Amino acid sequence: KQYDFDLLVIGAGSGGIASARRAASYGAKVAVVEMGRLGGTCVNVGCVPKKVMFNAATIAEMLHDMHHYGFESGAVQFDWGYIQRSRDAYIARLNKIYDTNLSNSGITKLIGRASLAKDADGNVEVIVSPSDSDSATNSSQQRYRA
Image (cartoon, rainbow, N blue to C red):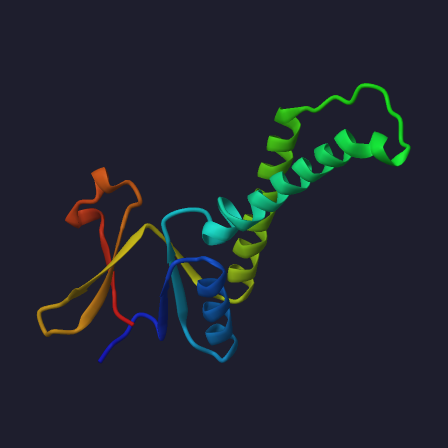
């Protein structure tokens, strides 16, 4: 049988990227399918941005309570736009690191939505469609076997 890849990983979250890089380090021909930003839920909308916002809230609470410990300060200003821009820049930097690591590991990135199907011979194929489901026509889909 002819295969396009030894391993085709669906999802470029932390686990998908780690397994893809490990397999590639052993010489496997690897591809990763991702429809969004690299890093998955944790990096993009979960753990990482939550920690940035939690740290900002913790500092605000400390500033609020500092007079209980003998500290005095003038009015403290908070710039909501600044913390948002800083958080987003940090996440973008992590996305770039993941992208660089995939490239340096020789892993093919396939951008789109993955689904599984059987071909005429009963073999499983991975179909990659554009992320925008409205434009997902048969002509815009790519089929891979792994």
